[in-house]
Image 1 (cartoon, one colour):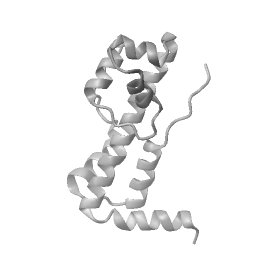
Image 2: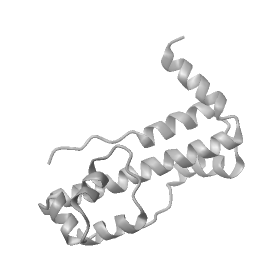
Image 3: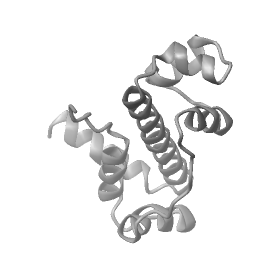
Length: 137
């Protein structure tokens, strides 16, 4: 048995605990959502030809705020900050439904506190949290 396999086996076993499952799903989706939004904002900033300092000045924030937002591996921005930055780039933050196929994998375990296939859930959430490589323009 490889370490990788042991990790997934242990995680699948942990996901049988309803409290752990809910926390794991919520945290995984939080990380994935923040990463998606921050990456979209950074892509828009680059497309607009703005430096991080210029973007910070546009919303009257310290440049370090924008550097942390766009460069930190563990950024946890407020929705208000994201909305301000997005507006300066001609964007707005919206909420959209999770696709039906994914909703089955995410929402039902949260509501029920269990999943039929903990390993599949863990791997799906891992894929959601894994940053997508930027495609060169």
